[in-house]
Image 1 (cartoon, rainbow over the protein chains, first blue to last red):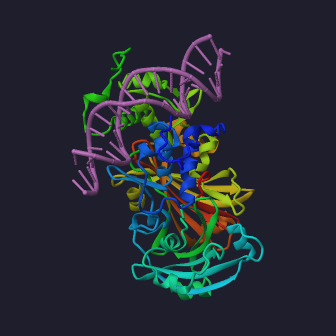
Image 2 (cartoon, each protein chain N blue to C red):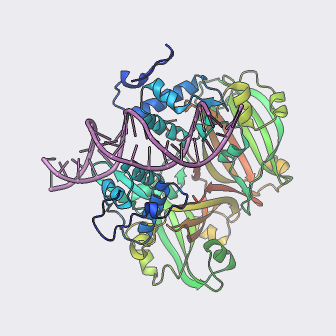
Image 3 (tube, chains in turn cyan, green, yellow, blue):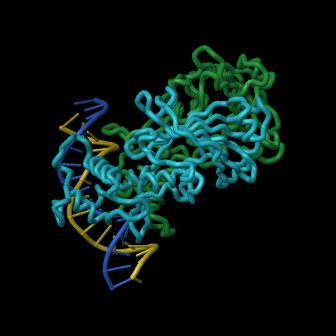
Length: 257
Length: 257
DNA sequence: AAGTGGTCTAGACCACTAC
DNA sequence: TAGTGGTCTAGACCACTTA
């Protein structure tokens, strides 16, 4: 059974029968370690052999647990180098969440401009989306996204003050990478999953001003809730997108089928 | 090595070195068998032990190949019963492709009414979507989808005559199940994947008539290309959706994270 | 009871990366 | 060269379904 090299090693596996398969227990244990921040973004977690020994399972079982986490984009494997905590701020992961593309299918990184920033009491709608208690405070800010030198989307973003205490306008204006990269690096919050719902709406005066369209022009409204490790909603976002030159990629053809 | 019980058994595995991992070769072999129609919808493929023997690989390797196909919803495993060719016409799979839900998140099966049906020469746009040669013929028909006794979507559907020869209005009006179920049962065509792009548009006169909205009301326009086994586009569809009471589910939160 | 997929083991060897 | 993940084996036993 498990080769214990440190007293801190807890072969959680069989101590809790729990009915669930071993590899799922291992997966939960790994997720717990991640949520506790024990392994940091971007760098490697211990090698598979060591983890298998730590949890007291075979290498095959350990790999099955890691497979799941890799499929969920929480870990990333690199043959010969190691297994890494996925950096969702990295560019290659940006398009997992950013689904606005040109009519020709071309992907591009948006240029972001901050329009407003405030701290306020959450509305009922916002509390519902984020699972907040009455009178909770939130930060609410608006970005305008440009693609191909053209304003394409206004994003109204709401995040709980309780998770992002100390956030300032300067954080948002001076961040070097993506917004989720800022969440990760400055606040230790990892956005790993989102849910999005779309409707069609007509541009109002604010949309007209920011997106350079006429009032009454058709826009996509995207309501997003973003989730971190624990499955707790962490960001609520409403985007209004001018789809006259760009569109939303709902699902894409899986090559190799 | 492989236990050959029939001369037809071809342990394709090591005969073609091909550089690719064994389990991927097995996966391709299984896909080929499916594309040839050797195993029919809904019922079981041979047991894992038998397949492993047929392909001359270990059970673990065979399972890894099947794992991929199950992840792609091409096969479905049932413990104790067997592994089945997924019936995409079945209700439980309907919502893999149908992403229109109520504002409250409720899912419902639409009631479909056929509005028009014709056979015609494909437009350039349609040829591009379906990869057809010049002057190819297509069937083009329009459905209106109702949810909660309310018209919600007009679907303009284009399919190549070459694949659906003999299709009549009666096929569409009298089908017992879903449209993709009809493709599967009457024409042997399996829709296993789709790509969708969304824009916001304004209702025109036809939309107004079918969806009972004013001309100029905002609608979601969903352009879908549906693919079958070989990855060849098989259906092109443009939907106009009234999102005042329903919405499009872009991506959904993965529980268990 | 027989047959199926689901889990798990305890390795082996290969491909790739870093030093 | 040493260390990593990637592939593969040849089983064992368990959970579930069907009869």
